[in-house]
Length: 377
Image (cartoon, rainbow, N blue to C red; front, side, top):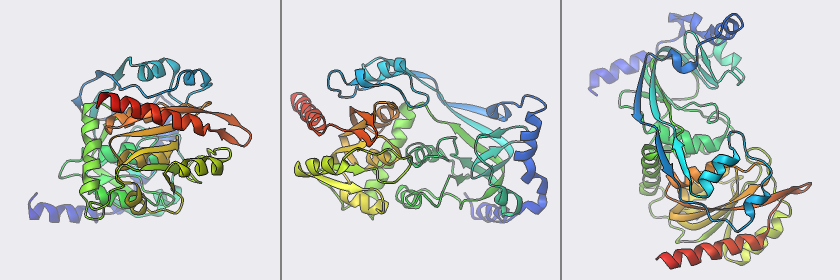
């Protein structure tokens, strides 16, 4: 991009809402019109769509499970089903959604959604009324938004979904990503990945790219592994190696409450076996990565904090996920595969004190994985 173009882009960024103040009302007018007529689906408002990768069939490396574990599952996380679980866990074929870039004209982007002239995206989320009505409104000629209905809610989806999507940004596009005060690690990971998102705010974008990027196909896998490479090549971390160590990652108070009953006893047992115990609460991303980078095995309960492990585990390392029996989640399997990792699951039953975890079962699963690994070496 030439210098004059960059200067022009800078001038355009300084333009404010005084040029088109009514655009601030778009989330509200679209919501009102919804009551009078069926609004178009968000992607129906796109002026162009490009298939970057078609739908494909894939099989996953099955996770390691002790016999009978799946019999203890009583429920799945939203969007997951037993039929999909069977295909992913027992080696069946799974359909991966296509990777599609949509282009929108004259669109409003704000922390909890996107609004075209006719439709809102993420209507279920609350609107940031103060920012929409009186905050600064910046105009951008071109941008890529990584906002999705889950990435604006959960840090794990920001780290595991939005960051790979950000690598689809074209050179002349600004980058718009979620950034919440209660997510202290977003700025650090953006820096380590070489991403330069705009400051949080409200934007009027002339041409916006938004990518349907949920398929976890081959393109996604390449981007996930590129982020792992960038992290290890960064000056802040390239000398740090955990040297094949063992990590237990505590969920702490992050995210939705998901407590482990008698966790201190579990931690003592794992620490005696050589596990490094890391609590995500109060740790910076750099401190976490400096202690865990290239660990061989990470044990943790399912949740957003788990996505740190997708980046710090060594290639082909093991992510052993403690799965709540009443909300078994399949995302760890698909994500770990894209990041080049192995997975294992144990199921924890719910109790009044939290989820009950069998330490012996964790250690047996790890022993089994190591035996399988040695047999194929």
